[in-house]
Length: 303
Length: 303
Image (cartoon, rainbow over all chains, first blue to last red; front, side, top):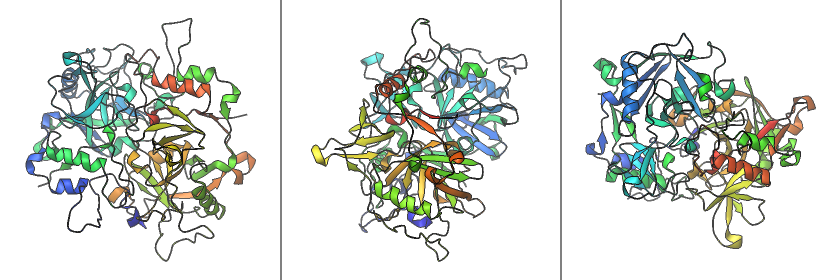
């Protein structure tokens, strides 16, 4: 019985069946199969954020080309081992998981060392100069959507230098929580999107990365029973063993990923294969796509 | 510290702060506060599907106006207590949880009694005659989107009787899994969307309801480690104690909900409040909305 649902799938594990035995239809799997080594990049270890939990590791790729100051401040915090022993304090269904210092704002708060306490927002940047590939999609929230170095972004149609680009709140996006003031986020309190993309947060909060591995550890956390999914007791909170950059880890603890380059013809084929579904299971091949449903292929390199 | 994130929220629990002390801004909370009893409906007990798990209950509202034959077959299965003792067999991250008979397709499969083994697909229906309220949204997948009796739907721009309407795969949507053949789904194997809306499944599979309570029990399930998130051992599978219609339950075990009517001015105000965010936290009030981000307010009646 399991087999008949194999085709109900989104992912790289696609098993495709086709009536045209002589010709491989364009599917996510066939695109990867036909890809060349140069279609992939290995992210810098200094851009990989390892969140070590009791039951495994979530790994994020950081986006300094969108949020250089937040990434820099996060690096300062991580270098100081700020997050070690802190906790996931919130898991709100169909929304976000959030972590930081459970004692923040009290006199038991952990020192943030040399990190800046406030940062000017990096909600968006100038579109001009952004390495980008736009896709054809009627997006509810942005005039244009696309990919930049593996990250989904939206942009507006303003002219020339006025045009803005911003990272989008797709599943797995990593953000810096903030309070009422625009500059009150400093990457000491972070969240990740665990539900349907809350795109109304776009341009209201700084995004600085996205999960590339282990997302299920955060998305399957028990939901908090407090208001907005906050855990109500310290016992519920999930301890963070450590957060490290890949570049801080001994070589044998580093993970090596290959991420499909999003500025290639191969990635354009990937988008096409996700837009028009040629897997036999699809009776209506759709022919349309939302930016958060494209996905960027990631594979771990094991030697 | 928790307080400063209170405003980072999606839901009915909104605590709103406003600079305009004299005038209540249109927020989801203010819309509910100003609503009249006639803005709400109590769903029929015969349309409420109670999925009873060891750790609680998930409750779905069924959509016979979109999938009458699948709802009827599901009723037959539920009347026969078909699901009692079966299991959740799959949890795929950012996609679906799925349940049914782990032995389906083998000689240990549970009898489906008088239920039909195959059903003609109900992937869409005629738009004409559908009770509906459309919303202004640039939807990636459908020409028009809106709400019908509390359910999100999409439709196309074909003329007159050719125009089709279909339930959309938003978070919490309940579907009838199928194999390769269009008629191979019969509601004996069901799934619910637990991640970002996989809208490419629209019109490819029959949707027949949506979760209105307890979704977190399904969305926070451990992800299966097998292909496509299938659980690999019987031990991983989560037993279903029973599935019942509200109308089959003793009165004291029924739940009574009020769901905001989606054909009212009040619901139009709700959509507006979700489109343009007047909560002070939002520095960019967005002014745009995706259909899966609207949400239909549901409240439980306790006397």
